[in-house]
Image (cartoon, rainbow, N blue to C red; front, top):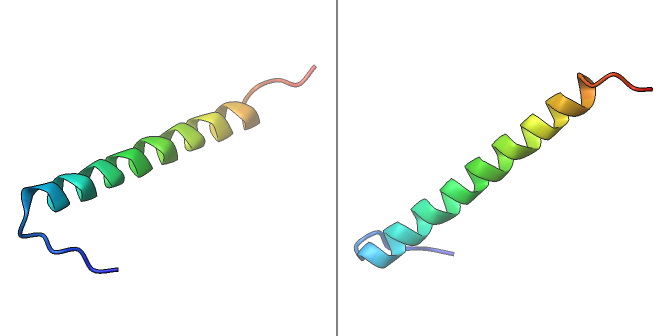
Length: 41
């Protein structure tokens, strides 16, 4: 799949996708950190 970065829409879409992946990755890392640092009963 090839996206041309000439148009503003394609560039905006790529930035939105990258932002979503970064947010999801950070959230998953936070959940994992909480999971391993929470005392189990």
